[in-house]
Length: 375
Ligand SMILES: NC(=O)c1ccc[n+]([C@@H]2O[C@H](COP(=O)([O-])OP(=O)(O)OC[C@H]3O[C@@H](n4cnc5c(N)ncnc54)[C@H](O)[C@@H]3O)[C@@H](O)[C@H]2O)c1
Ligand SMILES: O=C(O)[C@H](O)[C@H](O)COP(=O)(O)O
Image (tube, rainbow, N blue to C red; front, top):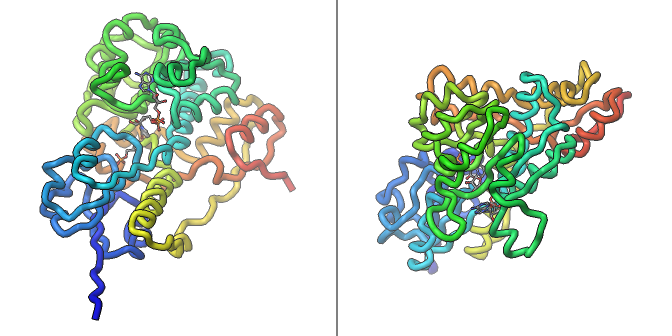
């Protein structure tokens, strides 16, 4: 008689629907990502993580793990050389949260523009790192009428394209948004890419956004740089973030730019499907019946100006200020808040009733909202 051996999968408990999604493949153990230790993995066949588990020899040596799946994008916590040398299959859900981050940046900028009284369509946006996130951000910024400067030396070389600007040129944009990975070596290393010299070249009229990783921008230098606004979602030494920078920032959020419901779900399902493929198992989507329904349609009260009308819509999808308030008074809440992050849905999930402002309607449609006829 053949004995059926139940496979064991250890999953970060911040992966939504972990038990429902992975149950068809074996026994699912969930643990906080930061607490996953080698002893939990001795008899585990697969490990599914987000960004809080350091994946390296110390974690995996002499365990049964043959598959590591990351439901997020950043790779700076993964020793990929070790995985390859140890013949452990690695998959990460590249692109899963790109739209979420692009929406976060646009939302923060629309809020800033309304509060500081400027028109985003009159501003240039410099995007450093034009991959999944950066290219989605470019598309959305163009929908608002912004002119974009793009900096991505690896792409510029590969594509032999003149669509890209140098870092120096890009740093002259009114608003600069960083979307590179955090890397420590190689020709394109990004650790401290925006350092003393680069920050010194900025004027007090400019705005800087970092929703990529702490350590790409030199925080010590940034604290001493006068800017029109700093929008920081990713920090050095998370969760023990710099209090002075936190207080200086127009928007200070606990690394949640990629935390939309759709992004988390996409990360989980992409890894699940890769694991099914790895184990040669059938994909089972029954768990999807548990998903929450579509939110009620949004009605715009004041659509006189496209930018204030847009902010009204964005605030009806999600109150980004709550993400800032969650840590502004007490940054000890950093990890707790992001682990219990309220559900917010991406723009394409929301219906918006057509407004009287044709320009606003066009922008909403280009940003991905489902424009509904007014009956
Ligand atoms: N705040 C969040 O919640 C959140 C969510 C998703 C991703 N991220 C971070 O954002 C990063 C980018 O995400 P992505 O999905 O767009 O990744 P991606 O790999 O698709 O794009 C990164 C781009 O940066 C470019 N690049 C690399 N080195 C560069 C350099 N020195 N200068 C300029 N460009 C450079 C690459 O060529 C690539 O096009 C991730 O690595 C991750 O660390 C943060
Ligand atoms: O790298 C990424 O994909 C993001 O930074 C992601 O949002 C981080 O995920 P978490 O810290 O929630 O595990």
